Every structure is written in C-alpha cells, then in structure tokens.
Amino acid sequence: MDHIIPKQPAYGHPEKSKYNVSIPVYLILTLITCGIFNLYWNYMQMEACNYLLNRQEFKFSHWILFSIITCGIYHIFYQYKMGCAIVEIQKNNDKDISDSLPVISCLVTLFGLSIVVDCIHQYEINKIVS
Image 1: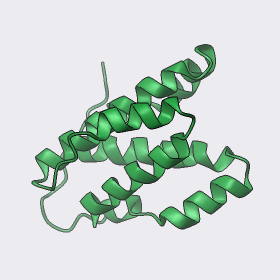
Image 2 (image 1 turned 60 degrees about the horizontal axis):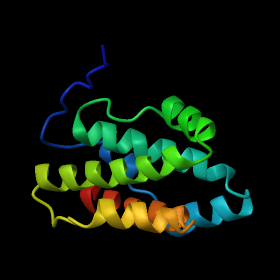
Image 3 (image 1 turned 120 degrees about the vertical axis):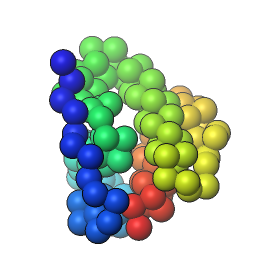
Image 4 (image 1 turned 90 degrees about the horizontal axis):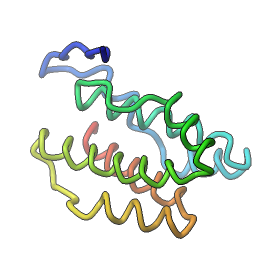
C-alpha cells in the first residue's frame, strides 16, 4: 500500500518554499560534480511532485534501479511521467498549463539533454511553489 502524504492546510505552506531552488546553482553543481548532484536534484523534484500531488507518485529507489537495469530507457519514461505530473499540479493549482511538457520532456531526453529537461521541470515547479 502506498504511503499517503497528509493534506497540508491551504494557508502558509512553509514546506513549499524548500522546493523553490536556484536553477543556475543546481545546474553548476551538476556540471562540476560530473552529474552526481543531478541525482539529488531529481530526488528533490520527485519529493516536490509527491508533496504537490498529495500522493506518493515517484520513488527515487525505483527510478535509479529501473534506469540502471534498462540502461537509461526508464529515465526517458520517468521524464515523460514527471512532465505529466507537473501538468496535473498546474491544473490542480489553477496555474498556466504546459500541455506539451510531457512530450517535450520525452523528446529532449531522447536527444541526450535530460539536464535541460531538469531545468525546465524545475522552472515549472518554481512557478508553482513561489
């Protein structure tokens, strides 16, 4: 049975602010650590989406394991799924909706630019939590 995250009150989301991160800082940290910091960045994006969806949609351990087993193919699916989750969050929060985000996420990742997709996802998450 999946763990259900308790619903937070509609006012004063102190938890939300921790998901609003600096894209340039995270990008630089990812580059200078040769991608290792990107694992943490993806973890934080999963946590943000789980919190904002109010359910346990993403599990870091599943993502890393399936990405390794499938030689990265699962990561392409994950980027698509993360794009779908962000669109759902946008709809739930009456924000501007990026309907093409899932497809763009998948295509850009296919071209080996998943770091760009991480930046796009973080930009959308930052807009939601700010």
